[in-house]
Length: 92
Image 1 (spheres, helix red, strand yellow):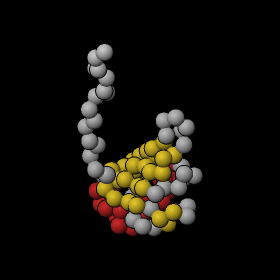
Image 2 (cartoon, rainbow, N blue to C red):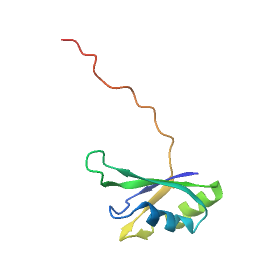
Image 3 (cartoon, rainbow, N blue to C red):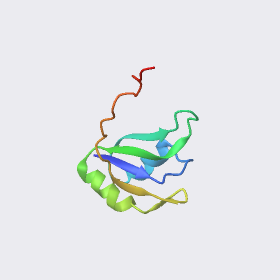
Image 4 (cartoon, rainbow, N blue to C red):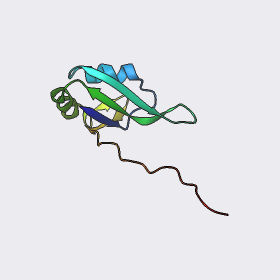
């Protein structure tokens, strides 16, 4: 199960998130989304749990809970939307 985690502290790292979510089951991966230019956290991440049960438990147990001084938003990640190709193609 893939989980969206919002309102994440900019100081949190992958191991911090893995430790918190690991209390609810096996964590397969943690992907903190970073700004392309600065490399700094954008304040959200995705956590992949090994099972749907672990994911549901983590969502229930961690939504609106505090981590590093911030109240987390935790819910099931929506499938990524298809993005159209780049713009361009304009004529002079």
